[in-house]
Image 1 (cartoon, helix red, strand yellow):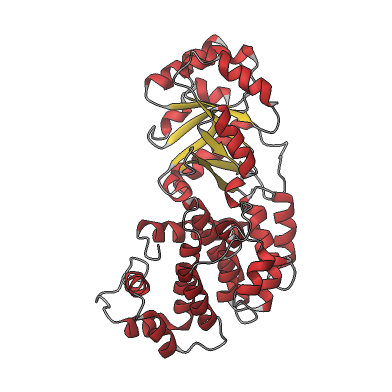
Image 2 (tube, rainbow, N blue to C red; image 1 turned 180 degrees about the horizontal axis):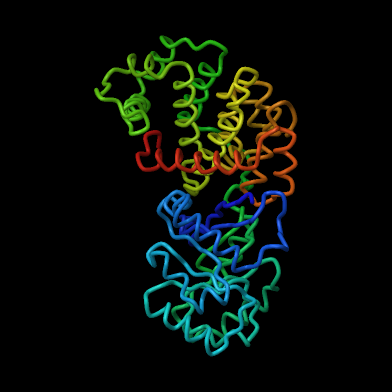
Length: 409
């Protein structure tokens, strides 16, 4: 059986990462496998979290929201996970029977955070409220008057924090904020905000010029050295980059020239691309840069078996700049006129066409849990589902390595 495990970020009111919800499917071929019961699903997640993948790899040390069935609550299964990292999601189908309430009281007493999933303000669920810390509401499914009135009715439970699910735009985020929600889940953070007459500042233009050089078929390292050396910030970043845990060199590198020679063309392209994306995403949620890096590495890894046919460094750029419109709050077609990228990358980013587009579509489908589309894309790319899952976690680990030592920020 193929196992699909991915993650979706949850933000606080400052758009900072609060936790990841761990998303699970039993097979990449089917988004809703009828043959797998809830208990089996949770068992599989726990097995992978505890023994195969590791919670640290999945969430990068952040809290994980994981669904638990009624049987697992009664059996105290969540206690197998550390309370500092696990948020217990109580499925909306679980009724507050005396046994369930007793189980929740015990978990609460042991210091676990409990979240009630998909709450629709049905009063029959209210007996759970004394033991629940987070209440999740489908922001698209429940009308706003019901949300406002329901939150007011439960105001007596001062410890409760409200989480708005399916926030898909910045306008919805602002509305949910005004209603009193503390946490937010959805893809609003990777959408551009509408800002008229947006222009690029001088530091971004400098990086665009550097990108022009590294995106040429053959890189002139001497010219790149002359562009980086006068820039104190870039010089500092390239030395941090070459001396980071990613390369684990025995001898510390102190020369820009030697750093560029050691990195080689592919390494220099990667460094400049990461430095540019970091600069472009300044002032945005850090998850935007993190997701861009995951996409970049995942696109690159998926294309590795065909590296004789495809330039994997261009696939890396494709993933890295796939959220550039959200970073710079500018339309992607307009950005493509300014950026010195190859025609294949530009076509994939602005039109979702060309030889690279299918890789990006596959990565986005997997990331968002659209397994039916992802399965079809993988078939067309002749990539096995297990390869997709493996490379996804490799990309997460690679991204977390850079975040531990943020050499390009």
